[in-house]
Length: 193
Image (tube, rainbow, N blue to C red; front, top):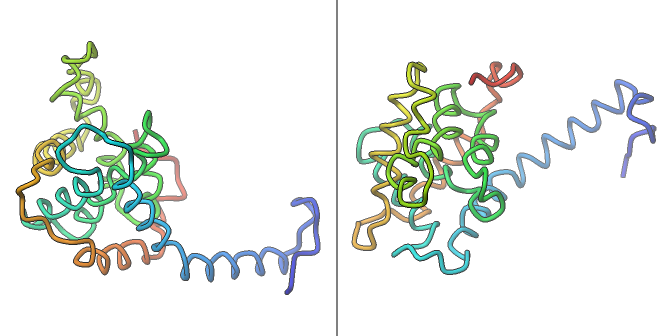
């Protein structure tokens, strides 16, 4: 197995970094989507959450709602993956999911996923002593209404055990296409707030 020549990154050569990039691309092609889907499936294994369906089922239902509403593939995948961080980043799950999606989706979709957690607060934060209008700090942002619509149409109402939800196998090809894209050029720039 070929390895880099350096033990300190500042001593690496172009050949070293070409090798690392080719390995990274090969690993990504072989494992990235499978790892993301495994994380999504693991949401169904979270301890009893108190909801009538699992977080995995919630994700499938969100994606089904988005698809049936005529959303494009990118938004359907965003709806499917918007809560993948619940199990390992419960206090910033929105940012976690947005970070996973960021290289492969538009700035708009990234912003919606990143902020959906605070936008969801409108539905329940007043019950737990938090400011249910916290999302108002983003009022006037170009994607405020899009995020509010995402939460209203595909998140807050996606906990119905009787809803005819599509299976993961239906969405997997979409996930492979979206996460298989070349990274957007904007992704290299700082994230829009």
